[in-house]
Length: 202
Length: 56
Length: 84
Image (cartoon, rainbow over all chains, first blue to last red; front, side):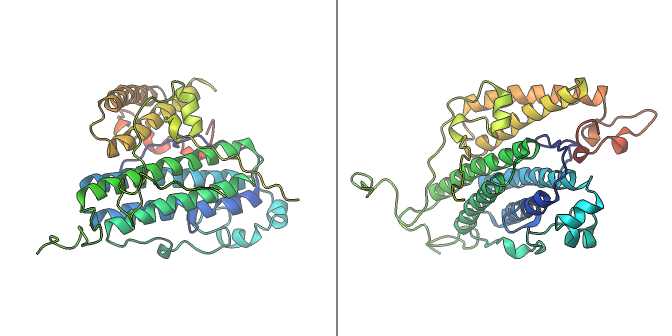
């Protein structure tokens, strides 16, 4: 169950349209390391988590990713809503425009549609948490790459905010992995899957 | 070349596993507006990007 | 920023503090100091959310108590930007 708050997690107020930047930033909406993949990854991984605290971390970070998804969509929307036909033609936005007008559709910067293959639910707590930590780093790198392309402070501030959250989430997933290790035998963390196998000795 | 020191560290963590150090809550930013703009209330987790590509 | 924008911004700040503390507490569930901070800011957040909803428009559906008109549906969407 979720409740919606009619506000952004961090303000987005962009005055200057920029179709080229929108085409790059849309990757964090529906691209390989974007917020859609992030939220779906964490929220989907919860069901096979053997430890309630770890499922709790996945729930809360997955929920925050939904707020980030809305922020990224808002950035793309505000960068494209006031484009002239001339700008659309000139900026290379025409290929997107012909299919979606100025709607926000989940795709990567290169036009590849969002796909569940961009994340995994392995059903193994150690494996899934390693993926989650890697996912935060991949999103952080993407935001680094985006930051090098931005000159407009209206776009820079929310992107910087989103990037900083990746590092905090990385820390929390790391701690969730530590909590997992504490529940397992350090002589062999891989003896069994605590979310699938009954006991190590049966 | 960087010299890596392994002495005394062998037994702290079992091998073939990844470990992120536990964060210990010390203090949060007093200026909450700053915390909001930095993207975290924890100074120790604030690691901003300063990269610049110096290739022309 | 006008009064409405300032209040919405303050809600953003304090809600963010609550979210960041909440994630910390998820992995440090016995940290009393963090819990005190959490309770403090969560209380402020609830007050500000209520104040905003009464003065301007409901931020959540459960704050959309109505008599003459259903304000929730007409409240501005967050992607509209300032003065939306």
